[in-house]
Image 1 (cartoon, helix red, strand yellow):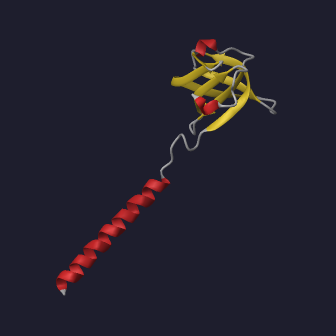
Image 2 (spheres, rainbow, N blue to C red):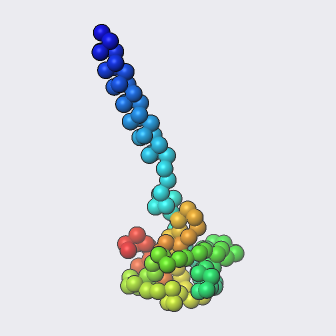
Image 3 (cartoon, rainbow, N blue to C red):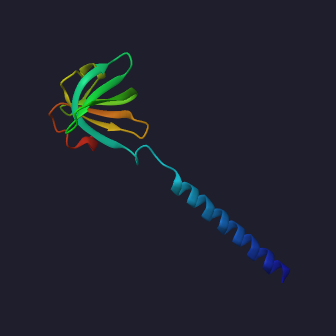
Length: 117
C-alpha cells in the first residue's frame, strides 16, 4: 500500500511540475508577438543617432523611432540600406515592443505586403 501511495504522490508531483512549466511558457512575450506597423512619411533621418522621424498617416506630429544594426531596409522589393532613406519618403516600419524598428519598407513599391521579406 505504501508503494502505491508513493507512486501516486510522485506522479502528482510530476504532473504539477509539468503544468507549472507550461503556464510559465505561456506568459512569456516575444517581440514578434508585440510587433506593430507604422505607415507614414519620413520627416527626418539621424544617421549618427540611428533615428527615423515619421509623420504617421492621419496624425499631425512626427514620432521618433530608433533603428539598429539588425534593422533591414527594403526599397522596391530589393534590399537597401539606411543611406537610401531620406526625408519625404513614404515608409512602412515594423516596430517591436521596445520601439525599435526591425524593418523599413521605403517608397511606393509593394509596401502593403510588409511581411514578404
